Length: 592
Image 1 (spheres, rainbow, N blue to C red):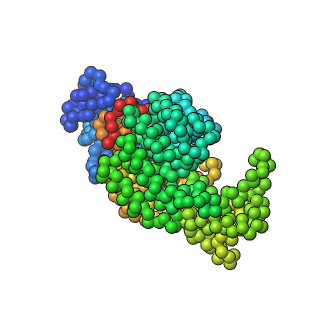
Image 2: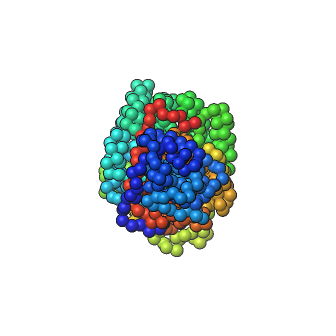
Image 3: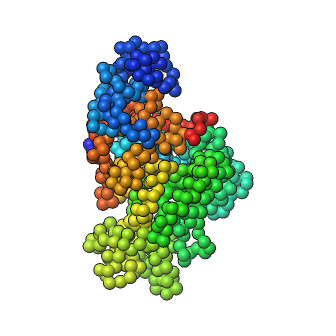
């Protein structure tokens, strides 16, 4: 997919009217949320800013496709039907193509906590960042950011920056639980909050919602959210009720235990995936707000197959009336940069260093600690545990290492080549690799079973989400989900594997996330809705990003429009900035 210099789509300024449908002999058009001016003449009513002709329309509801023309005026879908004889400033011949609503990514890291100004963020002066080419090229027209409990503060400043600089996709802002927790508790957060501290956090959540946040995100597997209680989180989620907000949670565990758990370091039973799902359900039950179990998975060899129990828990809660959903990225591996480290952090760290410049290399620290038999035994126990959590010896793959013969091999293959136990191989990869780099090289663990990924994908309450950010060639390794999430859901899981139908795959990334987020005028191809549209070729739509070469745009996406303006045209990424910040509307229409 090519890129060219930014240019804006020049559309006419004509206004739709209530007589439009009658003038065209069509069914009555839905009233526009912005209202209508005086009726136009029949001749004017037959002219549009943009006309998409002859496409197979998948309207996002899950219904089969139907053939229809789409007339767009002033950024909205003015008419849907047979528009023979109508004219437009720009006409797209969609014959042989499918037309769907723009995809909505409800768990995006296109912007995160911190300044974001110098990083890989849409909150950036660089057009190649703020236009989000890797996002829009896969058909995404709206992103929900500030995930995992992290958001800039105040949200008002983030919103103002995005509105001032312009942005490619539409953006919805969450407020981070971790952000407000740290602002209230400082670095004294390794404990539950007091009632007074919870009340102060709640006030900050209300402030963010007044400033335009659409919900609360949590990162309960991370600091500082890890030490919060269900009562604390539920109290903050309750603040969403008057704003019709949504709670999206990176839960406390995604498998048999959280990523922070190590058998040599922690006593007692750690929280499991089932515990985490039940907590999310409990927060929804107590508060009545919409809740989302984010990037749901079943991580680790010992937990493969447990998607069935998580699905049962959520379905039962939904049957009882709890408004709970989940989202998922369609890949069997986690981790943004693929930097899996099998040796525990505590065995590689230098606690005596006064500054990063003074730290001794990780390999030196590991070598020193292995000299003590008791410490060495604990290190090997933790390595074995991490291998299982990362998918097993045959699913931890080496992608970068000074010993180039190992690149492309899995841990078991390297162990067999060396004639040793895989735990010893993990140690050798550190000792014989880059001694200054944790792990000695770059590995990725394929920690999920495809059976679980397919089970989740098949559920009608699981939305598609990328868990990815802004990517650009030269950024270094990223997860292929940065570039290929939404086409992959269509190509691999719908068309190839058959885990769900094409119509269901489109619904999972259009009307379903719109429903979850409370978007009344996006996510469906319907008269009066904003013209967030994707025109694609079903024969060629596919993700091209790989773990070896992740910075590759997907194929088969011909056109992407956001608010009626092109961001992808004839397969070329335009680097345009038509996106809007979609702020909360207090007392808005409930989404479900």
